[in-house]
View 1 (tube, one colour):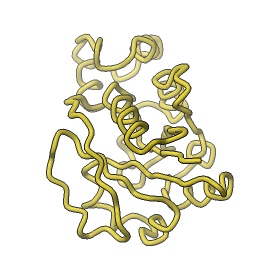
View 2 (tube, rainbow, N blue to C red):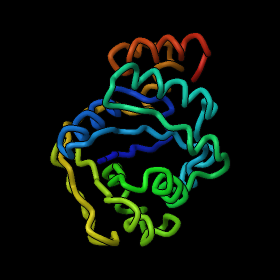
View 3 (cartoon, rainbow, N blue to C red):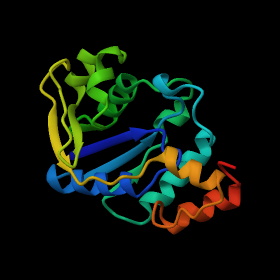
Length: 190
């Protein structure tokens, strides 16, 4: 079984996440793609504005009933800082016969050497760097042999969505309707 893993803050999850996941699912011939909201990302500690539970709920709404996608609460259930090596170790034990693909953004190659146990990460999963719209990516400093996967460029970010909500602007088209309704109901990002 081929399983793609897409982690992140998902604060909030948006259509860019969904389209990148769809592109990766097809290009890597995955059997399943799992979104994994972080409890607290070590490199983004103190920045999330929705609770882990709210981000998990929004990510479940993003995945909806699409049979290609799952959402895992593994990092939120574990709590504390979310280290990829710990998550991959747990998932490798849970799915010993699976081939794991860790999907990361184009900004990751710069920070990857500072992650906890980067050499172990590349033993546990194939790292796939998502390249949006032909942007330049330098993977020279990364251990192993990361793959670079071209995806479509979607200029939307969680930061922009939070700002639009704070300014009272519509987020229609940035997130699925169910996520927008959740943000409104929970009064997030105001």
